[in-house]
Picture (cartoon, rainbow, N blue to C red):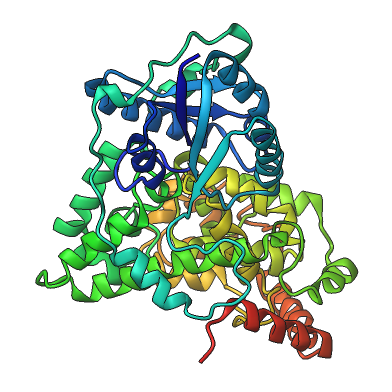
Length: 487
């Protein structure tokens, strides 16, 4: 049988700045490029059609680029070990190359099982680091220095010919990737996957859109164009963080961009910082980072299903909350501040355990990245014991960041005729105004599902009383030792 290597694509759907791919084509054996549609992810509540459409578009873009090398990505569907078993029956696999995956518990367990299987077949698995994340790190000693070294390292070019690759074998029906039609169609308002569009988006930001970044980042409407919009391309690996960072450095002296580039630079540093948190303490997918908050949630969370469904469906009667959720459902994107506000309303005002909302929002975020999602979700939910407690007032946020009501009107047509500033608190309308502005008398916007002020007061009392506990403070010290760089 032919001896080959395999490059296993996961969240790294690109050809440039791809260490496993470069290593594979530099070896003595030809390479098979592989992507697996795995049941553990296809059936996972964190994933949705939104993601699979983007992934498939990214794979199609890869294949267009690979056409010049007379090869394509072998797409298979099935349990990971079963797929590798089949490939090993067709070829003599020497080495599997991939990036380390900082993923959900299910992908970690899969990797452990696959590692055992590969070892049993005497197949080497060569895993490259993901960005500047350090596998198994239990301290941040020298971490910032390491980040800078990784991000400033020269990006090698892929030097490959058609001779470096293997033509994918015929795939049996039992492992054939089933591509639903809805994955193949573009959806209006949703970003399209692939390294080609990622590069276009990157260049457009630094040439044009980025000038307004620093002053538009919090506005739910303006941020849709002024923000980099690179997050899904980073989450699914159409671009590497190093490519983005080095492009930023190349434009550092661009007139009129300095404040925006400084703001973006800090966020690129945060990217690996949060993923490193998850890598070092992946249990936070299931439990509070600060373990002392588990008893708070157990004793005090109400977990009202009616409130949870109203939040999920954008039917709370709180204009900005509903506008954000409806926007997410249709486009897969809202800016950071609005995401934080949604989590705050769920966990603080509605007093619902963060675990009941985290997978759902993950399924709506086109840029879902487990290593960023869970640390950020817990930070906004106020269960870390080390971050500032922020209980967002959605009405105040709307007045400050959607002052003309543009975003609310776009996503809540029921409120189209209500003038600013009444649109932010329609529950305060008089009977005459309700009739004048054509709002249905049974509208949820006249009777929101919660009283924001009362719920915020209770949340403050609940959270601040807990934060001073000895066990919370002890856990906070432990967290700081692991996740914060020493001074």
